Image 1 (spheres, rainbow over the protein chains, first blue to last red):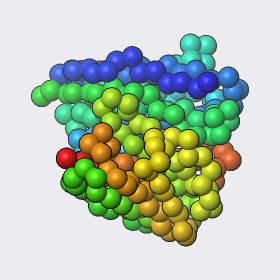
Image 2: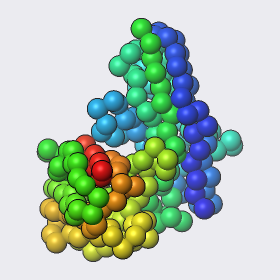
Image 3: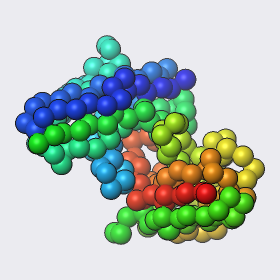
Image 4: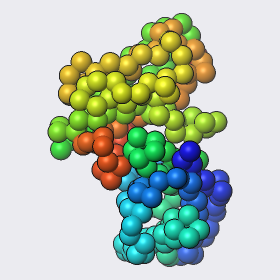
Length: 115
Length: 116
């Protein structure tokens, strides 16, 4: 069965610190997709990134970077030089064929960035 | 595109009342999903449609919950009768295609339901 675990329920950092949000997944499929979504205090869910299982290249987008490692079934998300506006709940999610390509979410990590 | 549109954004009702949540997916998207978010259970998939047909409703908690998609641009999630434990944020999401997990799911802003 597919499963996504975000062990960190809450993280608090001071502005300008770097922070890494962990995501560990389980799947029996060889083809799958991993996602990160952001949920700011306003409540909407905002798509950040998608990764397929055949592409292990790390990705950087501004202050955001993602580290995908199949060997450890992890897809971690790092925010460099965090800002107060980064405060949100971040969700990691998995989509695989075994589950009909449905999106399964982790429990989320609440990030609080203090000024 | 206006994105996925949900209404109402907030609903407060009393136990026993009927609640109807509405969703307009992104034009061209043929798959629609209803999720529920609570502190205890996180984000749960309730039901999803493909080409207006319900594919899997195994996540619907009880018979009190029902969902319809009469056409490609409109879906409803109904709770009758509502109970306090139904209090949650209900998200509607849509994407194009169901056969691949690659397509990104776009979420609406959510409907926050409070049942007193």
